[in-house]
Length: 133
Image: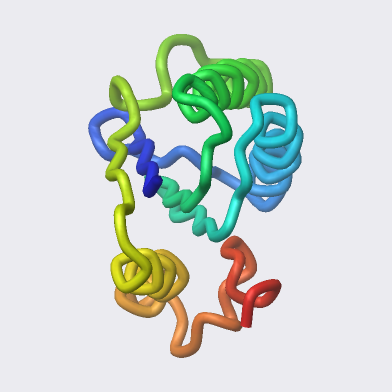
C-alpha cells in the first residue's frame, strides 16, 4: 500500500529536526506493533509518503491511527497548540503488481528531488533512500 497523510490545509506537519526524528521513531514502533512491513518512506514538510505491506486488513489503518494520535499529541504539546494536524483520513493506494511497486518506491524516494529540495535523493535526511540505495 502507498499511504499519504497530508497536513491540514496543506500546512506544515514538521517544524524541526526533532519532529522528523520523533515521527520516525513512532513510525517504526507502530509498524511493528500493528503488523506492517515498511519498505519506503519520505517525510516532506506538509505530507508523508509510506510504502508498506500490512499483515491484516486492519493493520495499516490501526497503525496510522496510533501514529497520528501520538504524533499530534507530541506536536500540540511541543508547540503549545491544539486541534488537528492532519487533513482527515490518509489517502491510500493498493499496489497490485511488481512494476507499480517499483515505480511507487522510486516516486516516494525521489519526492524531495522533484520538489527541488535537493539535487540527489541521498542528500535528503528524511527518506528511506539511504537505507535502500
